[in-house]
Length: 541
Image (cartoon, rainbow, N blue to C red; front, top):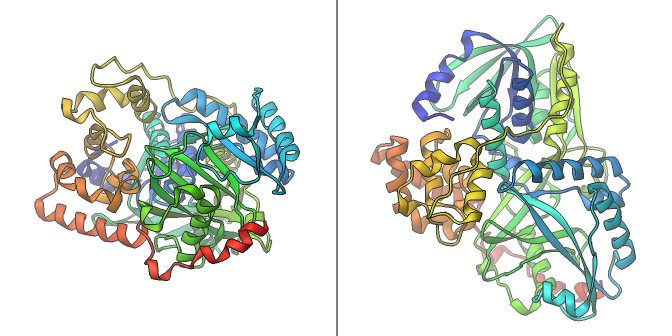
């Protein structure tokens, strides 16, 4: 996308024109809107106060799914739309969005039971236009999920959904938008909205990298800041409408918690769905669903109570593995933008998106990662009111432009080639071309190639080391201590590409390791509630 110095020049020139559309927020919703608007021929600028995908869009459960549980809640249209978008993404972005098999164990006396779950799966498959065998007898099911709890096991059900690297999905959509004529700049924070004639006509921005401030004019301003949307709405007098909910996750080495199929279960304490699935060479466990009280300007972290809650789920489903807290490699937590309807149980709140035009500010929030294209299309419908004379083309079109296949390379396997094509699109050949042969190998413990670090440092707007290790690549989530053992090699590859001095590198490294320890490491073990004391509750359920 750009190097640091070209990014600084671009940021300084943003005030020289009036934009048709200014999108505030660099997560998947903002990226989708930028892509849609740019392809409609509108001059469109996206700004993000932190890094692209810094918020919810890099801290999700990594699932591109229809939301099987929404069938139970009667939200058939949401499920249908999500399933269709999942199928579209699987078709358009292989290597970035991949099918993931799920297995759900059927235990005597435990909900939801075989018949109810099977009925939901039939409807789920019908929405996707497919049929598959769902139920497996006990012995066959144990072949698929060999480490699960065996007591009172009747058998199990299998179904298919999909998974992704959420941050890379955002980057791929942003790249498509830039190729279509859009502009995206990270680390530009909105400080003030200026209204003229009943609409927001300009925005005061501060560049957190250079410290410069300037005014950007736009005919339409869109608030796509997710869980932070109420903060911006409050500037124009809007009343709070969101209920920030935190979802926290554990990451473990694949060898310690091996799962070929993703395993879904109802948590033995409260019946909430929990997933355990293979992701990027590790095993991911999540999620919680609790009200998030801390200030949103601070990075979210897992609490000791959430950590124990997820450990309880692991112990219940995989008792023979005897997983301990120190087996956990990393944790992460994200805050979901959920529309507040006042329900006592956070998990009962809906996951629909909302579009509000209030005092000349268009706010788009809520929704699911999977349906970002539909959310962007709904935003375009409302933008029409702010752009007299403009007629949007609302036909659904492919998200990703066709890219030529990556030429075969003797150092790359077929799966590695597919991975690069999915994540980098038309830039995949450049990722390979700029890499020495020894960088076309995976970083131990991950599926990430060393070459991806070089490309990110060279071309993907990396301003801080955390951008590189937590979002452009996911090394900070996949490796113990955030990948500290590999920092010397990472430095040799990336420091020249970034153009950082030794002093800058050391400062960035210290800041990254401190951040990782605070927000991606384990809570102090002496603060962890003992989930084993709840074993009678587990057995009673």
